[in-house]
Image (cartoon, rainbow, N blue to C red):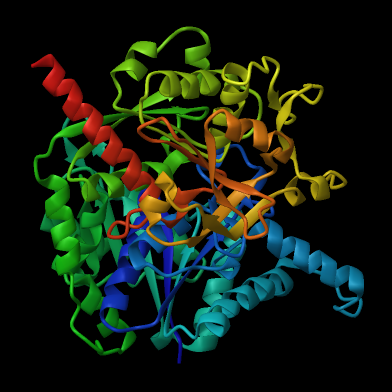
Amino acid sequence: MTKYLFFTGGVVSSVGKGVTAAAMGLLLKERGFNVAVQKLDPYINVDPGTMSPYQHGEVYVLDDGAETDLDLGHYERFIDNRLTRVSNFTTGQVYAETIANERRGDYLGGTIQVIPHITNEIKRRIGLVEKETGAEIVILEVGGTVGDIESQPFLEALRQLRNEVGRENCLFVHVTWLPTIGATGEIKTKPTQHSVAALRSIGISPNIIIARADQHVDKSLCEKIALFCDVDKDSVIPMATADVLYEVPLLLEELGVGELVLRKLGLTAKQKANMTPWKKLVEDVRRPKSTVQVALVGKYVELQDAYMSVREALKHAALANDVEVEISWIHSTDLEKDKSWDVVKKADAVLVPGGFGSRGIEGKILAARYARENKVPYLGLCLGMQVMCIDFARSVLDLEDSNSTEFDRSTENPVIDIMLDQRSITNMGGTMRLGLYPCLLQQGSKASAAYAVPKVDERHRHRFEFNNSYRVEFEKHGMLFSGLSPDGRLVEIVELADHPYMVASQFHPEFLSRPMKPHPLFVGLLKAAKERAKKKISTNE
């Protein structure tokens, strides 16, 4: 019988529920179990693809093109399983499917209600994970917090599912926040008690409570939570905020959470968990190292979660290069106003990530120009590749009005243009090239040296492509198209031949970077940045 681990949140969101679920999945996988993970998002959008990054953070893309919640990035980075679209669904998808069924007459004229129709659709989608993966343990995270009106159908569906599969096959893990009163420094448990009471009012009692806080949580507080929330004393797990993200599974392991979960589910570990690689990883992170500075020039830098995978990929690559990475978050509109250039000029590398819309584009183009003219290592991701090409056309080919038709539909030199087969599509959610696509690498290029293989598969999320009408002119003036689709039609990677490291990809390499398997393009960037930093030190000496 498949076992289920249900994660709910209390008090506030963004408390680390997704990281905790991912870390728990790692502990169970290390014990020999086939683990699957699923995120249930309560918002009515069909997916996060058309949502502002300021509201949702980054959109994480899977191999099959699913646009999903950023927590799926945590799942993949910790558990190292390649997830599919069944691993994330929303209220919008549930209602869209239910209404489509009703329109076809599938309900034979019945009145459509939240119970049973919506909850049945939720349970059906949960069942798809086990069918597709054959998982022995399915971890489900419910987005938001207990008490949110949007979450109620999901929680009701989980309550029903518990009764259908048997209580012995389900475990509810409640992740809650313990606030600290600034005036007294006292940690308060009352909000946790209220969130558990709200959960119990709908028929769900948590089996385990993860008590999150920014400081050490005393044993007496855990006992108090256990008493008032009707949970076993050993099932209240104190989790202080970790300074290293990848230490979370180690902390859970030290607290015996892996064995606690198996005991409550009536399971026995198939093998001994080997956490040595993760211990070494955390030790390497904490070990003093020289620092390289990366200027990340983006449009949504006020919310760093908008670049969650980029930030983590930089950290992974830093470890591979035995350096510490210091990220300077530069708003591209500031560069347009002649601000923040002092920070960019101090940086050892420039990274321009993806994005949509015209705001701040000229600032990104200026960042690419600065990196090109001053031989500063540069990595462009998706839009970061496109602005690199626009700058090259304007500055090197002297095509001053060059642009992307995304930003200027009337430009006479559309070096970036929408794909021909997409022009008839008016639905914004349907005009994207999404998911995994193959890329052939050109021998002798920096990209080929970084990957050390002739062909790669990478995840995409974009509407516009390099305009092949300009390819010959670009090549004549020193642009190398080092990665192409197998049919040669689509440009995937560009780089400059006479530059230490100016490489950009149309795809999003950050989605495939892992803590112990850093992405080659990021590794190459920080290797070049490390060399530049050394030269600066020797010059100053």
